[in-house]
Length: 225
Image 1: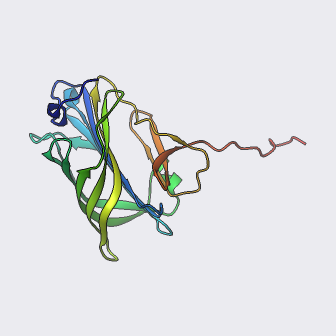
Image 2: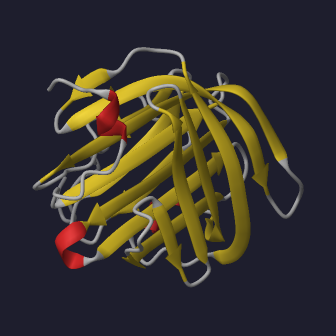
Image 3: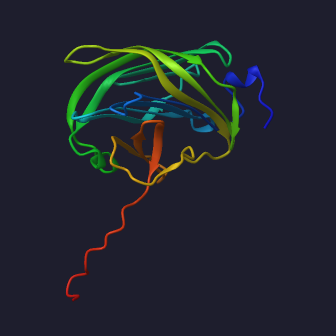
């Protein structure tokens, strides 16, 4: 795929289009994800987000019924606001979320009903490029750093020069982004179960988010010796 600065803008003719950003602390004790997927013919969008911190519940946001608006990069639904703004193509983006997250003591509960304590969360982030655009299937990705503030009940988290990676993809069908598998996944976890049956189950490493590999169950079957 040949990518130009015009590809930073939305693609109205695409059946589905997605923006995704991740960030992580170098010590892998904090990680954040925000995604937005638009289904043009259905006039519907998905907005999902997560904040993972060491020794804290996972803050999980998932809204699968976002009415599309005239502004293609604005997600608004009951108790949800999400926004993406391209300030300079391939150089700077502004990204934000304000919502009630489900605080999950067990991150794997996000793959089910995701029942947790409703917890207000908001962030306003400035993304700056540090790397060149890399083509991927159906789009591109780009490394960068993030400055901003995450507002929480216990107080704000200030982010400065935090490593980040973002994706922009579009086409007829999109699967979750392809991440390097995590061979040893003892880090922070942020799973999502999407309405189309696909799953993004991620764990945090010191160099970013990775795809969690299923753990083999070697316990004996009932009745076996």
